[in-house]
Image 1 (cartoon, rainbow, N blue to C red):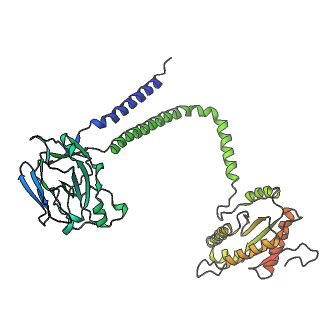
Image 2: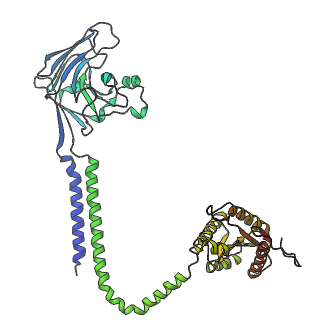
Image 3: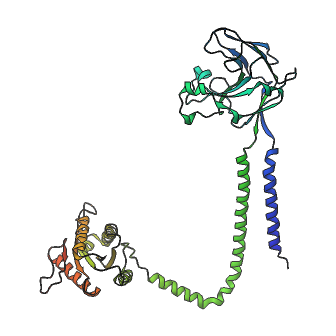
Length: 446
């Protein structure tokens, strides 16, 4: 039997793929944005150098016909050409970044867009772009970036499409501007002029130009944005499919809830197991250290680990903690416990384990550590605690430490030894570290 849901999904997928292919192919057939330069009402002028070595004259300004005459006279540089002003021609130009092509319809007859008579082999199209980073208004003719491309005269016999990617920043302009390489790429975001001239050195004599039409074109929407729209379509479609799927799952869930009544016993067992896991939490919420349940589990693993040859334990107790609670309240007492837990977690070594043993008493298990090494760690912790003060109204918080080795002893015996050492630290005035020595007699703590 056919699955109508599957068939509809396949049809939808096929239609979406067909639409995507058509959408991609459609881009090359979209209408273009255009900008007419000639003929137009724009300010168009001819120019030449001031030494008289080149002369620019209009032959027929209305038909955009002009002549550049290069005289046989010595000169370091001769220039002559036509200039189409964009914007104010100084600093506020026109953004041409949306365009990618210059169109010139050209041939040698009277109907040509660009008709050239002369002996030069190449012509030059240029685009001047003003940038406030390096251009100056008073000298924008020279300081505006000079983007140009060379056009062989032999190409003037047919219509031309000149692409903006053919333009490069003139080498002489890069040398004179001294800009870094990162700023030496063509720019078209603020064009103040566009023109044509024969590049220096040009042959002596008359060079006649007739420009009937020049225009720019570019896509109404960039190819990247066009494809991004398609990706957005797929993204929205997938999100919509996900929401639809979620809605159907919700319906199925609502329908199946009636069946859960038959699973009451199983649900109760799951609830009991969940409660059991909660009771097995291993971290003390106030201090962030292990609680006794968690600590016992860690101790069992470490004592049976083959890579642990020796171990020591440190037992510590906050001095005068009951007095702190009685005098300043249990909230401040909790702050002291939390502060001590945070200090221990941050100051012990990576392989040490910290446990809140009960009340204000903590234990640190130090694997592969002698009692002397554990004593040094305890002393560092004690000093770190003495420099901490809650506020100006409360006295400094101090801690007493007892250290014992587990070597040749059971965990329980070592715990008793550490407790004896802690008791001696309290008896010796508190705020100190005492270590249990495994010797006979009464003087077994130092």
